[in-house]
Image (cartoon, rainbow, N blue to C red):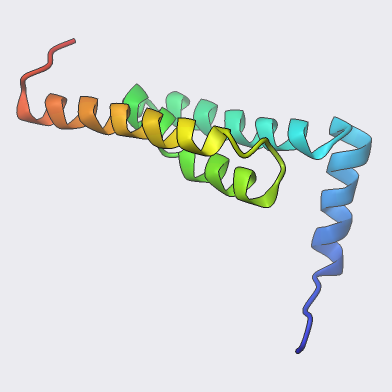
Length: 95
């Protein structure tokens, strides 16, 4: 089996993890909040801004960066957000 490595990306990752943030968990939270802030600056609906980074949290839970019990919580939270979005589209829920 051929193993491909991207040395430059690994060096950047190691630099960000060890020197700037201290550990992988803080780097993951920074990336998550960075995407949320960018989406809110672009004036996306808050439901969409908080729903889009959820797959990133699930990937972080699968990789072992954050505790695995966050995965079911994210699925529950995304179901609630999806319900709010559907109610907004149908017009049964008003702000």
